[in-house]
Amino acid sequence: MSPVLSAEGEKINWVNYKTGVKFIRFTMQSINSTATITIELSNADIVTQQQQFNRLVQFKNQFIQECGNDWRWQKMTTDKHDKIVSSISTSIENVSILNKSEWPKIISFFKPHLISLDKFWSNYKFALQQ
Image (cartoon, rainbow, N blue to C red; front, side):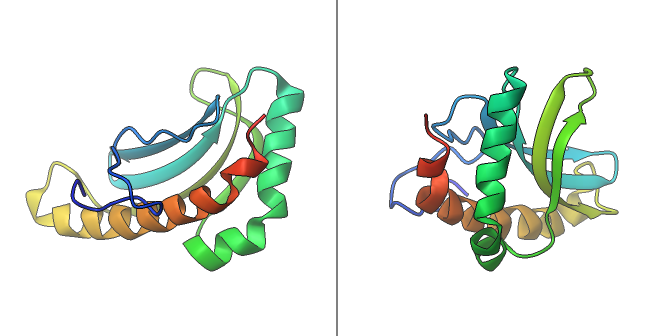
């Protein structure tokens, strides 16, 4: 994805995407037989985390229009380290990064989702910046 520019026309590190908002990050994972893209809100100040998530919910229609309707919105859940996080994620099942023949399917999942997420983020991140 290196040659693909951001929605703002800039060179971007897609793997280590900089959201510009503290405690909000985009992650890509391919674990076991699932590939997942997540917007993770991890502010330890629970009130701030809730406010950020609620602001994203205010733009849910625009998010769905840009990124699709296949995302799960989870407010105030616990991650694998028992930390309270909120997230918006989408995934595909039955793919393995270890199986080279499945790489095109994984890339075909990650690439359009990241591009649409970047486009949404460039238009709405202002609402989360404090």
